[in-house]
Image 1 (cartoon, rainbow, N blue to C red):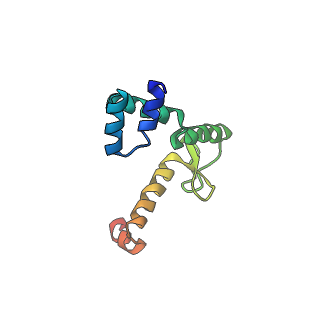
Image 2 (cartoon, rainbow, N blue to C red):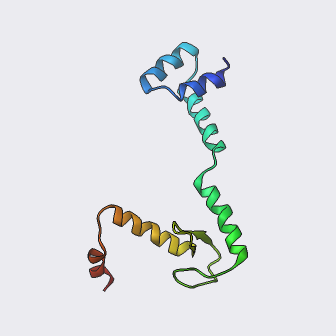
Image 3 (tube, rainbow, N blue to C red):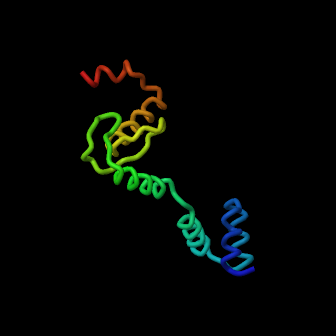
Length: 113
């Protein structure tokens, strides 16, 4: 096995097994870390997909389904498939996190007023 193949295999091991494997095959934890970074860069990330989708929707034009603005320039699809601007999408994400932590609409009303 090559050094790169050893590093890839080391990524699949638990921390204790990894140390033993590294010593046995003469690879460092830095080698394993670099190998992990290379694999991450090859994987398509959610952000990259979102940017592609954003550019397509922005070139088509249209209005945000929530605030109605058409001059924001950045667009994406929320979970229900509507076209929304980046600002509204960020707001929806924050609201989902609050709801996941048990905050209700009634709790939020006192902050809105």
